[in-house]
Length: 200
Image (cartoon, rainbow, N blue to C red; front, side):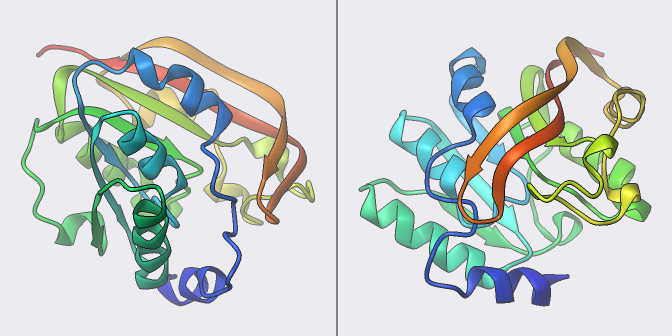
């Protein structure tokens, strides 16, 4: 999978643009605290935006090319981000150390997805928030972007199951107008949520 993303991110242009995702940018100020983890962050547009707003930003992705582009964008915007390359289970993050978690179009393989989401939640402090947007199952076949395998797409029931431990303030399936670089263009159908980690 890293080969696919390294090839996509090796292009000079940013595959999904350099502007932040609109839903995430609108709700970023609702995150409690300043330390945020960005999962499957690619070329860094959302992480860099948070750093510009004064957040303490950590990101990870499988792609070495993604990291290069993200750090170049951060330098261009005169901010710094911590960016790690590797699968989540190979990275040494401290449990309950982040105030916020951002997943924007983070489509993990179906066989590890629930485990990955629960691991991510373990890194979030109780009371910390998650901002999430990804393609819905109804997006399958739509030319505006997203995985071609329905198992990689989401519905609301899967979200509730895979993010067990969250209180959902928003959970919805909506049609959006995508204008995010060459690979996200046109009308798309997404599942998105804002959730707060419950205290045990």
